[in-house]
Length: 96
Image 1 (tube, rainbow, N blue to C red):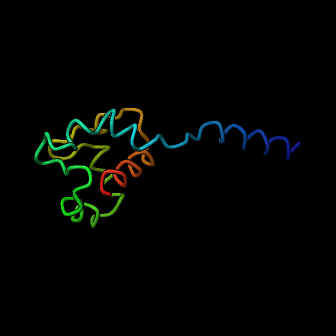
Image 2 (image 1 turned 30 degrees about the horizontal axis):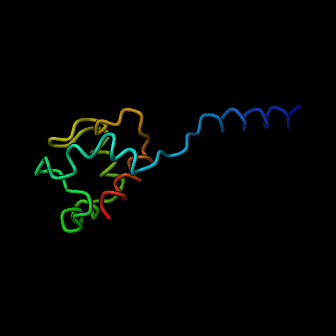
Image 3 (image 1 turned 90 degrees about the horizontal axis):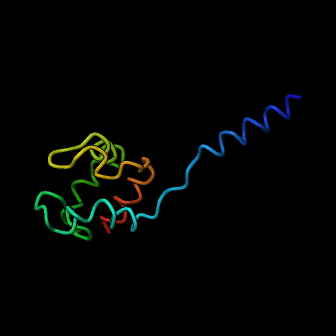
């Protein structure tokens, strides 16, 4: 009985986990409007010098900025269905 309950609990939590979205798709859908150079304060995708001081703050700070909004960035960065892992992947994608 305990094994059955443990198995059911594992299956239930596994169904709640979501795979990270494709960072390029998220960028194209939600980030490119500002991070392709249209908004001067937003670091442009691939601009290593602009990303360097931001990356130095660490992923947790950057994800917090995206989630809560920061300066001109709106909360959740226009990706309402993104998880913290999605944001980390998109930040990594944009900063390279």
